Image 1 (tube, chains in turn blue, yellow):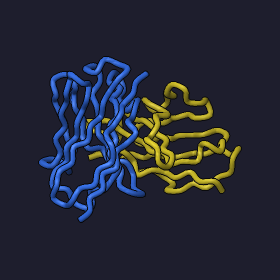
Image 2 (cartoon, rainbow over the protein chains, first blue to last red):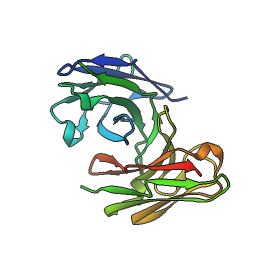
Image 3 (tube, chains in turn brown, yellow):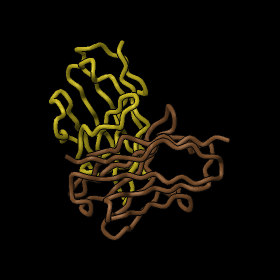
Image 4 (cartoon, rainbow over the protein chains, first blue to last red):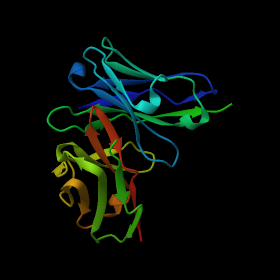
Length: 120
Length: 108
C-alpha cells in the first residue's frame, strides 16, 4: 500500500533553516508528484508547493518563493522540503501528500506530518 | 486568484442528523478539480471526495458531494460519532492548489 513516512519533529531558532523528508513506498516513485502542505497551530491547511519526482521540476506558492526549496533523491524514493529564514510564524505541522495526477487532481495519500517549532 | 470560502465556520449537530457543508468559489472552477478532506485532531487529512462528487476508496456512502461552477456541497446523510471533525474543500487550478478555511463539525 502507498506510504509516505516523514522525518521527526524539529526545533529551530529564528533565522535558521529546516529540511523535512518524506520517504515514499508502495508505488512507482516517479509516477506521482508530491505536494507539501503546512498547518499552523489551530489553523487551516496551506499549500506550499509541488515537485515532480521525475525530473525534479517544482512549482512553489507565491508566499514561499525565495524561502522554500523542494528536492528529490530517487535512489531512496525520498522528497525533501527545506524552508529557510525561519520565523515564529513558520511554527507548524508540515505534511507531504501524493498527487493523484490524471484527469482530476487531488491528494490521495498523506504523510503523518512533521512538527517544526521555531523558537529562540 | 480564486478564493474558496467555506460555511458555516462551525456546525453543531447531533448523531443521526444530516450535515450540509458549503464551499463557495470567488470565480467558477472546474468541478473535476474540487475535492473534500476530513481532518481529525492530531491526524493528517483524509480524502473524502474528488472531482466534486466521487467518493474516495473506502469512504462510506453517507458522504456525498455535489455542485458546479462556484457552489459546492458536502453532505453527510446520517452523522456517526466518528464524523465529527474539520472538513476542508480544495481546488486545483493554474498549476496550484488552494484550500478553504475549513468547517468544524461538532457534536451538539
